[in-house]
Length: 114
Image (cartoon, rainbow, N blue to C red; front, top):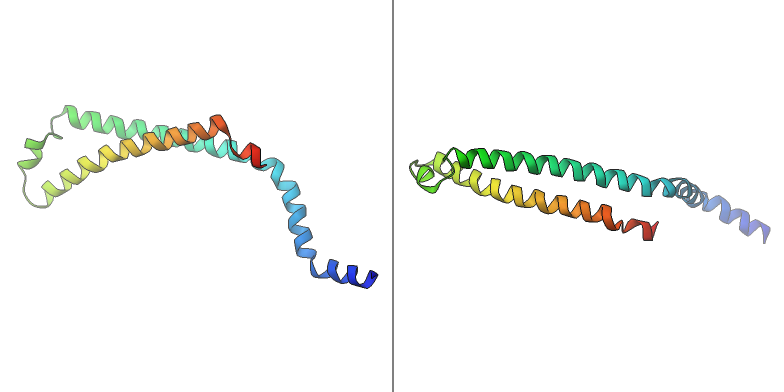
């Protein structure tokens, strides 16, 4: 019986190392997830404000209007239309991502798991 337990310990020592490492890492994981979510929230808010500023300035200059874009032909017209659409959806995407990370910081679902 002692031989069997010794054999199991020798065979499963990587599992014991992983369990020991998890016992050390898991208390810090909750802290790390909070810091990561806060950093991602800050980055998303910064990018959201940058995209919103670019869109607002472009729209105020009148170059985002449809008649202005339609005055061009070819690749420039396509590029301006694509930039207009992507800038609009980029602002929406960043707003939703910022809301997601704010919700993660408010509810912190990983506290129930860890």
